[in-house]
Image 1 (cartoon, helix red, strand yellow):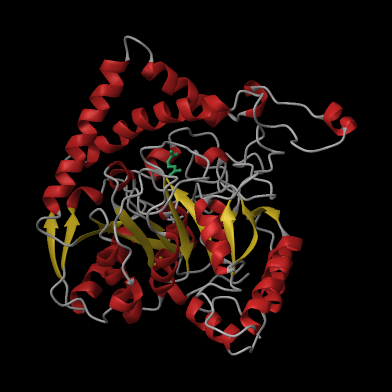
Image 2 (cartoon, rainbow, N blue to C red; image 1 turned 60 degrees about the vertical axis):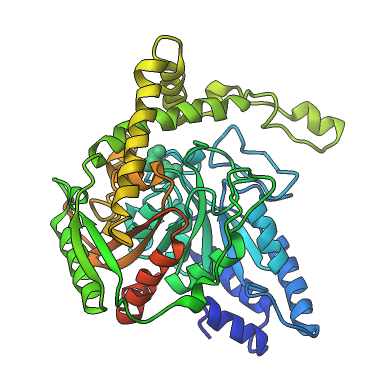
Length: 494
Ligand code: GLN
């Protein structure tokens, strides 16, 4: 029996009816992971996974209702602290770090008795949009192994797309969930800033980081969000905002929904195929009853520049804790082990991209430059936030492309420090404003940089952006679209 690509609801039913056990399901996905050659995982925690699955099976065998994700496997980007399981952020400085505690989100999934299969590859410290800055090498795109998955949640994109895990946790600071979701043809959800706890997730840029995941559908996304979202006393940026039963509120039509199409998101240089597919999707949304209107967000063009100042500033201060003394050495061990233990200096422990960002950030924050760059960037950020707030008085959600192109060739980001800023220029504005957004598959387009493995081309992502804590609105639009289309049901041959 084939269990890859079943919805979470279907998996729940099979587990509840005992058509399959969690151990069988877990071994099934571990088998697929072993066979895959995508470099999606950094650590496969096989033993722990089977143990967790056994505990889930015991729970299912006992009387009473099972939590929604009980016995269902998942994987996590290597930014999430996992007690007893290595957490590297795909960096050398943390290559032997074993966290003593779990991130809040990992803890919530443990409470559900969900099964962690392992830790996923990513750009180092989540710096990038390609997966190529990983100290463990790039992840390959399941649709075309000569191409990138996008990033920084590269392994999360490959894992869900190739059916290696039913869903995968990721982080999105300036597009890192939406970008690989678009390039790998899966659903990727970036929550409102503060909707999901950041506690225990390695910090990149603290005023931008949001904790989300990639999944096979918007319906699955709604279910997962209901579980992982909410206030956390350990993260003061999580608000006391109720978490609705998103999935229960779904409708099959979009009657009465107002959708804005921001004209600035159809930038020069965008691939024609991407634009065409997104506009086709807009027509589909109209057929479902939505009213669409062109809107203008003139500050869009400054977003990338603002991000290029704020993001490295926050990175330089967050990465200061990796001083080569506190992390990077074994916590337990014999005297002999400890003799062999070494700490990496910052020079050898950080990759080029991290160093570039530390240097830029330190420069921008230094006396004399702070006012000229950082303060100015914060002012423009306020304008961007205000502009979105104005537009959301007129429309419920915004619909736009997630990326200007389909997946590019392996190697195309490695020598281009600007790659991430270009690839994520349509994702960064929503990040700066702390909005919620989702990328869902809306078709295939031919790449402009060479051949595609099939005549149809590579996946295109449709981005739906909503106001702060407006997840119900973006989920509703995505859900209705996925009821009427089957792009999210197309999977690569792996
Ligand atoms: N591309 C952006 C960057 O390189 C986004 C990264 C992210 O969201 N983690 O910074």
